[in-house]
Length: 299
Image (tube, rainbow, N blue to C red):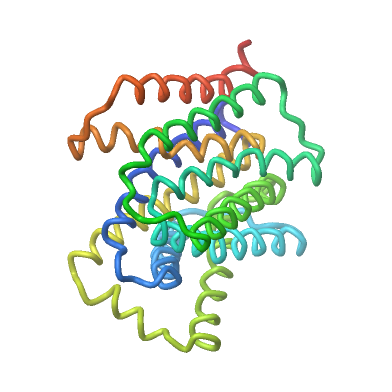
């Protein structure tokens, strides 16, 4: 049951903030690691963390088979396929260009939620969503010079696929998590995604041995594990909370604001300078976020 009015929106926004850190870590320390195996590594670590949580808390499991199937489909599409496509795009054309295409996920999710579940956004939510998406795209365009990788067809198709997968995952979560514990729902999403990645690696690619590339360098294991803990374990739980307690389009838009939070991370941790233009664009994106969160409740 919702504990306060802005629980879902706050969780989705916090997920975007921590993804700003984890995405940067994956980009830096995941070089040379297969996208499939990096995806498998982070999901396995998150599953272990969920197993630890299960020792101290009772979970509310779904009461019908259909919910199990929808959660499993959400995991297969969002985590197994979507995250793999995201890693492919990151390696192909960099984090900034990839993030531009992720701005398409919120309108995709809003459209899917309207078509399949009849979920309609109010005026302030639509205005906030549009403002956020537009200013996100402008921010990423202004910072596009930081990516030195070429714009490729593989990268574009992978990024578009990842955005569609994210939209489907958020929309299906909105329905399937009603009456289901967030921890249990996250577990039921991660488990089939890990199984799918293992089956693909062992029966189709026959290259599970490549996972040693993640284990050998101790320094990379630490940072990749930290990225998996905050980005996959905490991030997925927060994203599921956002999907459960807020509308699909709003939750997806808020969880897609990662590029906004990359700016202060880069400024305070890496010493990157912020221009007046970027600050103004960031203010516009934050205004869109505020409209989505506060508009329907207070305006």
